[in-house]
Length: 212
Image (cartoon, rainbow, N blue to C red; front, side, top):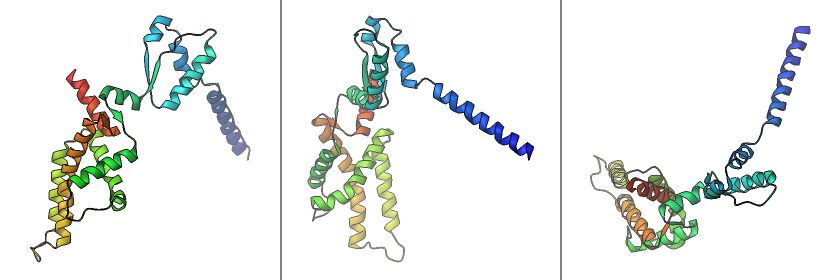
């Protein structure tokens, strides 16, 4: 029908206008580059720009270079991850190094007589590292959280009909009782070596800022 055709034409027109608008938009990083270049060379040289990623820093440098007619000192561009590490005074360790260091802690504070081999340990250690990272990243009281978790797991295993726990249940509870021990020992080990995982660096940086 004529009404239907007009409706489709109107939709197509709106789509075309939106597409033109999007295509003409200045990329956000290019806009930032233009704003930075309005600063005097002396101020620009002292400026620090915290970027969401290292890749974003590359694009910002590209947009600034496009606008320059002569060499100048660029501002310091740093990713948020590197900025946090810098503020914490610690170096972010890679995941493999963290796994090996956590295994050393696990062997030093075993939760059972026969400790897991490295291969067995690696099957569950990544989950533990993730939990430690989230605890520190969100500034959670680790002792309270992990103590409550241990108590909850113990209640889950308890039964009125069978008051005595099986060896498997006792081992299960001991595992959760040891998590806070591993958490504290692991953090202390990393601090001694000037290392951190991401969440730990966030917590240390926040505490350093509060102290200032």
